[in-house]
Image (cartoon, rainbow, N blue to C red; front, side, top):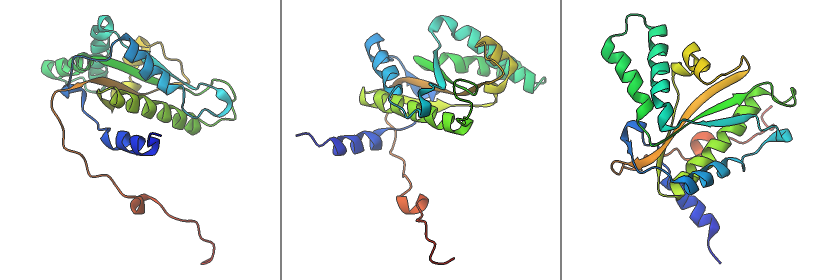
Length: 197
């Protein structure tokens, strides 16, 4: 019988963030993309709201996204130089596979808090990152001020209760990266104790 826990531990330990500028082709093919997207469906989802969605940004739409990035920068900094605006545009062109995660505040049961919805979305993304890793790809989450900009919100048709959370980039790492030292449980775990009260 296979050591499922051991395989999972190995997979978790092998996942790394590789920035989009260090990702190159090939990205996932159509079948691999389906497997990555299907992994998201196994996230916890209180009330089965499906309070998050993913938007795939095809190659044909990258220029429009680049324009939104540049417009967002100009919106924040009217004095941005032409080369800075070009750098903002270039961010849309990096990863072979690029998706955006959106959390919907108003979907379904209003009693289910936004933070709980965001946790569900985070679990969905982690599942996708792990599936991408299992398939041999590198990946990253990126965010930034552009996600709140009017130009990006308009491009994606986001409503007032839609929250653009992050981008997910997947591709092949240009080169191997040294493993990062991870925190140990004693750094983030405590135990409830009422004895000292």
